[in-house]
Image 1: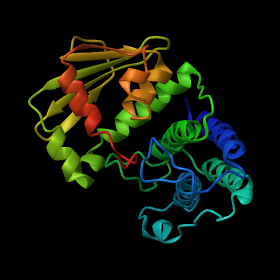
Image 2: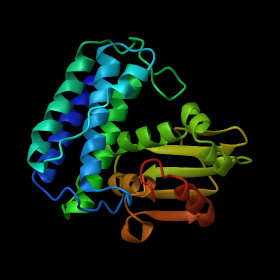
Image 3: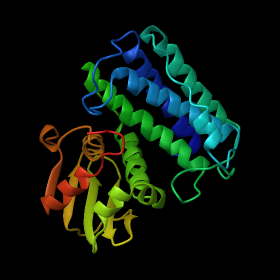
Length: 259
């Protein structure tokens, strides 16, 4: 997918999310993010999109002004639909004003800039709509090819140099001696091998034998890897090999789930 395609999906996914949450109970819990209410989820999605729009649209190479420009979500759930829809439109417009190689700050440590943020907004929209689905009892569906792209975003971000350096607890837990995990989507092209090294986690897009293999339909695989669904609730996902190694991995994939 290219930047334009990512942003089209951001608008689509956010529109669905906006329809779901409109007028709902702001204090409703979000089970997949145990410390969050529905208001926190709305705030996170909408404010994150606005921050990315500022970073990209104003071509920021340092993020402090974008962080300082945080815009909280409306307290009134009756305003959520419009606020979320406007945020998605803002971020799409911001990306239309730049090229993929326009210098923009990003936290990955890889200087990916515009490309990082377009995929990051895509992954955020897909995964956080899953949070809303659980909170509101809605059916969650996502095209397998989009789920594969969201898995790529999740794994690439979680194994980035920036995440390793900014989360020393994660780095300490993930230091290894070459242990390997193979993730495989069975209904769309998508395979990844994560190798735990002493100073980083190396992510490769390949098919190879690993210490543990985790395979299943892309949407279920995405939800399991992002801790939005337990293995017990994902019968289509199977784990072959060292289950303890996979359990350890999942135990530290607590990026924004706060649980």
